[in-house]
Image (cartoon, rainbow, N blue to C red; front, side, top):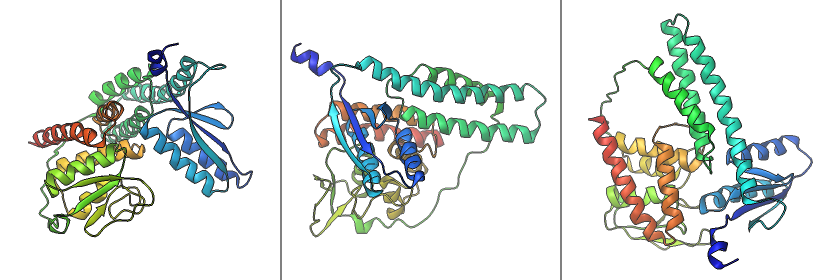
Length: 327
């Protein structure tokens, strides 16, 4: 086998863990966390994800939870030699996602059958709520559909049909906020974040350079142990001044801290949130496409500055899209 063939092979991340027998709820919690990030079990205590910077970060958070809960865990990168092939493992991922997509499809068909009968205003409102919930769930699954399971197309078609049946014209205009814009304190600072940037850090960097300080230096440092210098602001770091707060990603927190209320930026924040946290909270239709674009940028660019350069083009265009969409 030559070097080119080796490079073409799939690389996997494996989380190997041992959980304490008690409390039982902790085992359920970790199982749900692994399901939520799209990991599949290749052995009873070994879970796999396709290897990339984002999935590694997902596994690292689960590893931390396991260790904090009294368990043991390690993460390794692997190439399959024997016993399971890459195609078989990819099939495990596709089967898991197809099962999930099939569940949404069943709900969508049941709702469509209900709408075949006489539809009252209350029933239409309830159907709209169910559709929002199904789209939210679909967005969660798309974020972890690593190899393009076929069931997704069926669900998207069913939900598009339901959209036509339950959507009514609604006034979407919003009065622009006139809140204060306390950006001045963030100008003239050096911004610092972890190396190997992904969506939240790319988006924050874009917001900094486009709306806060066009000439702001952005430095990339190790994720742990960095001591900030005077005048530096750390973002999307575990002990950073701008980082995750509650269920908000760093981009959302930065918007709040700077008082920015531009609806186009709020829409981008919802997309960044769902890609970064994978909780499907907002379920915007644009999320899956932007997630794929950012993943492609990360996979094809090793240097963080290159990722920012290409990522900025994505967010520039996305921002203009939402501004024109409002108009």
